[in-house]
Image 1 (cartoon, rainbow, N blue to C red):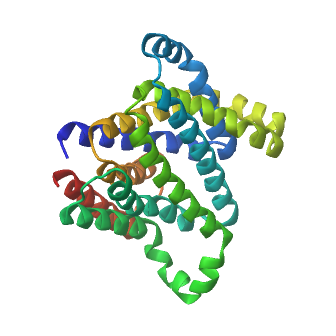
Image 2: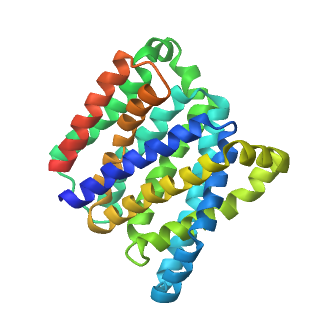
Length: 290
């Protein structure tokens, strides 16, 4: 992997961790995520219009935009449902750990990508680090009743979330071959915002939406900018590098979230978080040098 896509994904991880800090501080995470999508579509509308007029979109590009919007709507619904039925510390490693395992398989099968043994080692190290960060202190709990653990609906939704992440990672690798990454990101946000609107209004109502806007308007705007930057850099990296490499390296965001959580939110730095972060960093650089 060359240095440019590697650097882009590292920057994406920092931006992703930063907007997730704002998400954690919000009063209603589901509404916050939806509103930052809406905010992106409003603030970036001039850019989207200019790019459509200046560059246009090749015919297959519209199908990729529609497809990624649908996958992202499913991703947000699966993620929110997983948090409804299980703790974040249980579902997050599954949601984030499945994608780095699936993407290389899908990349080889559908994108004709090549994955070396060193890359596989790096990916396994990253995935291992993710589970150490979140599950080190919960191994005995999971092992005590693994059947009940895997019967948990939250775990099912977490697995579906991981599949959605893998799906849009491979889909978007193809999509940015036809659409400028900036325009692709704008249309993705627009499609996701529209797709989530009926669910958000039905579940939460306008009163809750107004409340979240009143409390966190500035944070929503900042988070929308960080989100736009985070995934646009990933899309740019996908244009010039393999999805099998980009997807695992994105998990560096977990390390940044551990650091920001400890410094800004005063979250405890447990042995599991430190050890898992070291594994993730080692895996990321292993994939990068491969």
